[in-house]
Structure formats: structure tokens, C-alpha cells
Image (cartoon, rainbow over all chains, first blue to last red; front, side, top):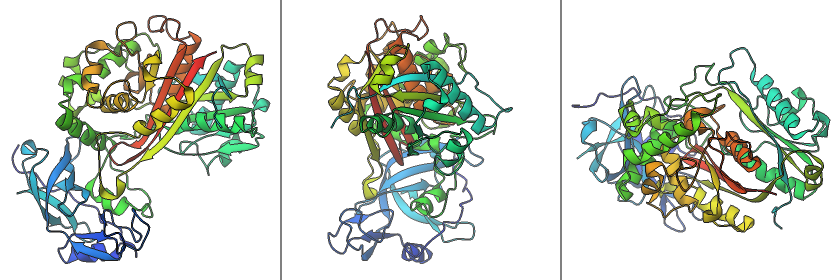
Length: 131
Length: 389
């Protein structure tokens, strides 16, 4: 199939609870929110830890590596795209897109690395591409 | 306290339309309400409880109660997507058991076909206050590609194949050929399913349910009222509900919330999966059926592919006759919400009113199960077990 085209990404709408995450994205960092009490990371980020309801006070910067947990290439779209869940070594699995790749070569378990793609008028969005 | 035997489903009506450009959504609600009450042999003014979900226009139940001009003392507008109407059966039984109402009316209606809705393939923006929207919408999740990711993981973990998934559609089509109202009545083969275009890998067009207008309604009543009516008695034995999401980032696509709602319903009913003679299983996609069959305990986790193959879901052929109306895959998926029609076909089977070609002989114990929302993101699940009394 060859290298995929990039789809236009709608702007995510941040709010006070999530501003730090999107500020991180603007600085090229994928931030994972972590509990100040139980220490567990979670995603997507919440103010209160979804495991113990204590303040999730810390943000850690993801290494930017991961592996594909599952994916699907959406063929019925103006620009076909690959949606995926990617497992991060930090201990969370996130919904994302796989970009700049040959869709026909994607496999579960494949190693991927973080790459940001600009959104239309908003902060850049964390995507992944095969290593 | 248990709801076992505390309420009966005495009215069930499926709207015959599959495309209704000439009707309003509220009108369809009224038509199915009238249909289900007539089926039960009850009048509008007998209704003292009303149940509806997000397909009903207006704020919760308010507009519909007013439009239908009901005088009710109990309402419930719980919305768990396509599984809502199974939740409503459960909640109606609970309300009746507690004396909060005696005649509960549940309605569903919608017109996605007339409105040209790209139900499965278009990302939906949603209210930005929904907490996950900003972390999901930029990636364009759709109904089809999120269920597809469940199928992809299932194939990876358990060796499930596209051929096995296709058997689910084949079985549904064998049933739909006998249903004059079904949108798709043509019998298809495994090869037909695999030859249909890929929508979202690994799901083909024929792995996806239909998009239809229409609706349905149910009337759930107190045992005393049930016994005063002329219709066959369909007793509610057990119900179960559950919601499953992403566990704060510990995503696991290998099972559905049926793994929780199913055992709750079986425990309350006091029966086992092996006792069930007919099952209505939510079929937004073939993979939905396969995962729920495993999670409800009809086979071991991971064995669903083998279980559904070779016609095992075809009435009169296989061990678990399912969706004998043709289901959402072939017959009807009104308002993009298939839970209502799941209950209706189970009621037909228990009454002996299914089409003779697909009627399960002496059907005395049936299960209906629904999944609503998105299997790959977050979903509601409800299981209802019913008996012919």
C-alpha cells in the first residue's frame, strides 16, 4: 500500500483539569498523570486518581516508546487512517493513531515510537509510528 | 430481594417499517406503544410506569410522557445505548416488585436510515464536557473501527478467523429469509461475507449490522395483571447489568461486560447457560456476538470462533439458535439500538410465535442480551432470562 497520508486532526478542547497535558504536548512531551498517594499512573488524565480517588498530583514524561496492543485501518474514510491502542512502558494503554507507515505492514506487538501531529488550530496530538 | 417471578412481559411489538421518511420519531414511539399495549390486551390508561432512553426526543422521559399523555407514577430514562431496553426490563421488574408501578411501558424508535446517518463509519464529536472526548475524538474512533480493534485482538490472542466471524452473519441470514419485514432476506455464505468490502480491518461490510428506521415496545406487568390477560405468560427470571470501560488505562479488549451481567442474571434465575434453549445476542457486528457468547458462558473464553462455526447458531441445525428474526445483522437495528428487538424475538420464541421455520420446539427458557455504547471504548451490558410460565 505504501506510506500512509496524514489525515486532518480536529483540535482537542482542553479544560482546566487537562491544561498541563496539552501544555506538555505543545512542548513535545507526552505526560502521564500519576497518583501522589498510591503512585499508580493512569490515562486519560484525571485530577483525582481513578484507583484511589486521592489527588493525582504528579505528571511523568513518557519515554515515547510503546507497542501496538490492537489496531484497525479505517478503509471507509476520505483519508484512510489507523486507529490503535498502544501500550506504554510506563504502564498505561492509550488510544491513538498510527501514522506515517504502511498500513498493510502493521501488526499487534509491533514496536512504535511517539510522534506529534499538529491539529487544526489546537495543540499537537500524540501519535505513534513503527520503529 | 430477587425479582425472580415478580414481573411478566405481556406485550411486545416490533414496528414493521424499516424506512419511515413520512413519520416523526415521536410518532413512531406512539405507534409502537399502541402496538405493544394492543398485543398485551391493555389500554393506554392502564400504564402507570414509563421507560425510555436517549432515542426518545426531549429531556429524559418528560416530552414523551407528555406527548403520549400518560399519567405515570414511575419513570426511568436510563441510557446505556443499545442495551438500555434490557436495563429497562430489569428496572421495570424491580419497580413492579417494589410496588412502584404495575404496568410498565418501554418504547424505542428512531429514523437513522431516513436521516442518512453514517452510523458506524463517521466519528461523532460529542459534548466537550464529556471527559474522554479530547483524548479520543482527535483519533477518529468510530463504531466500526472500535469493534474492529476488539476483533483484531481476539484474533491475535485466540486465533479467531474472519471465516468464523462470517458464520455468525450466515446464521442470521438463514433466519432472516423467513422474516418478511427483514431488511436483508438473502441467504449469504461465508465466501460472500469475506468478499464484501473491508470497512475497518478485519470487519467487512457483511460483518456489520443494518441501519434502519423503526422501533419497538414492551409491556412489563405485575403477576396479577399478567394472569388476567389472554396472552401466553412470559415470566422474568433473572436480570443482570454491568458497565465496562478502560480501567484508567488498563485496557483489555478480550472480554465484554457480559462477563459480569451474565452471571448475575443466571444466579438470579437459578439456571445455567446450558439450560438456555434460545438466545437473542446483541449483533451490532459479528464480533459482538462472538465475544458475548463466550462471556455469557455458552463456551470457554477464546473458543467462540469454533462455537459459532458450521451453522451452530442456526435454528434447527445448531446447538444455540440465536436471533431467529435475522437480528441486527439482517432484520432490523432501529435507532441504532438493538436491545429492544432482542427482547421481542425472545418473547416470540417463548410464546411459540416465531416463524415456524425458525421456532425452537417447546421453547421454555430464553435469554436476551445487549451491549450498548462501544465495546472498544466503554459500554453498558444487560442480560435478561425469561421463562414460559
